[in-house]
Image (tube, rainbow, N blue to C red; front, top):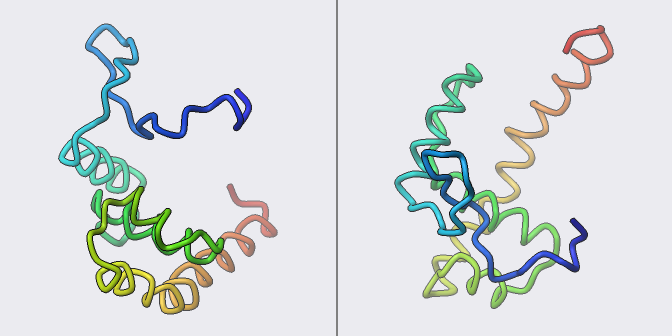
Length: 115
């Protein structure tokens, strides 16, 4: 589906019924958190991630992409710019400390013929 055809108001994470049909209803925050926790543990990640990690990551990625604060706040439902700034202020630390090392290691593994 092209980006132009995607409904910008549709939920990113939608519930699936027990019969495997997409319900169109958004997942609750608790459901997203449970999924993130289970999947990161299953992947063997050394750090315990939470559903909140997605929200923080979205804010930080949006800042790096130059998305306006008002658009980010409309998406994340932050009520104050001060709180948004707390999330954004961590961008440099996260990209320099954590992901830079992960990307470097992944490239080394790939070059060595690993998965």
